[in-house]
Image (cartoon, rainbow, N blue to C red; front, side, top):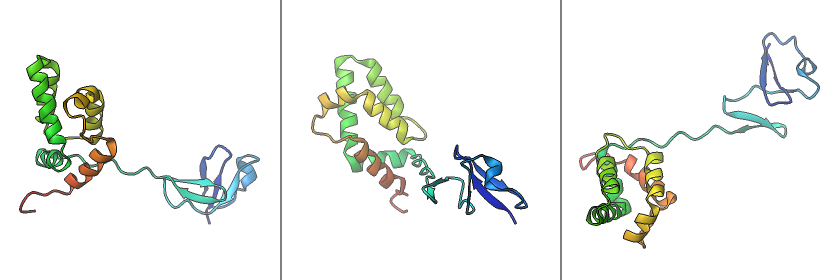
Length: 150
């Protein structure tokens, strides 16, 4: 019968055959019930699930267009892009054009782009809510979009 221990540094140990004792793993090691899964940690006498959440899904181009429409971020994007072109800021203009042409979209990259353009966005659309919480909520909704027939 296997026995299970947690060492003072938090390392989980499985003693196959059950011939070991907690002391064999150091003075502060404790015998514990079997760990429920790889993301669980032993804390204050119980297993706590600290499994990180899965990453947000990637969006396809139609899903990203849905995100832009449902969140209102599309109007912001268009305003920033038009303003950049009109002012001769071809770097920002080209970046926005290229970003819009992706084959897949990642939430982290999108949030980083928004953060990098925060001053430009604030100037072009001062009342727009492009907060991380708003974009993330719209992202999750867009990830469920399967098209008009879906």
